Length: 138
Ligand SMILES: *[C@@H]1O[C@H](CO)[C@@H](O)[C@H](O)[C@H]1NC(C)=O
Ligand SMILES: *[C@@H]1O[C@H](CO)[C@@H](O)[C@H](O)[C@H]1NC(C)=O
Image 1 (cartoon, rainbow, N blue to C red):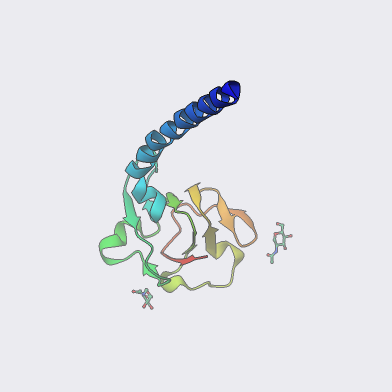
Image 2: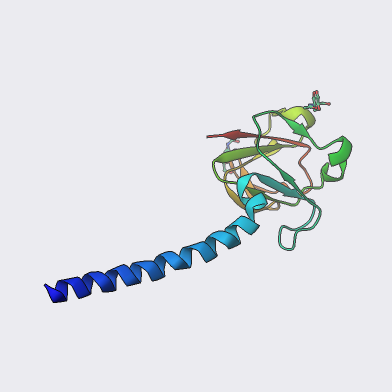
């Protein structure tokens, strides 16, 4: 009986140690929340962040890289896509798929250098090609 109690105490203790490791990891994650929750698009690199804009997913509408985002027009070199969304980048404005398989990059959650991204039919070089994007939740 005493042994059983001790074993329980030990396992409860090690459980605490394990769970106390989690908050530290969580707070690091919180610092990167902008990267984790939505979409980050950069004209340069993600690490270090160079010419990056954070977008927060708010529906499925098309975003053109014009106006205040003109610096990204055919300049996107990297992106980070948050969890539970998929973002499609288009060569043309208005999120128009213009026929060719290499006219769009379809990115699920993760970080990407645009010289090698998933297209409709295998990996494509999409560096400095994107003009617009749209994301959807799944
Ligand atoms: C994006 O640009 C295209 C082409 O100029 C235009 O038809 C479309 O309305 C624009 N979309 C938005 C959301 O501004
Ligand atoms: C997809 O890529 C493969 C290999 O490069 C090619 O043989 C095939 O024709 C392509 N399909 C389309 C629809 O372009």
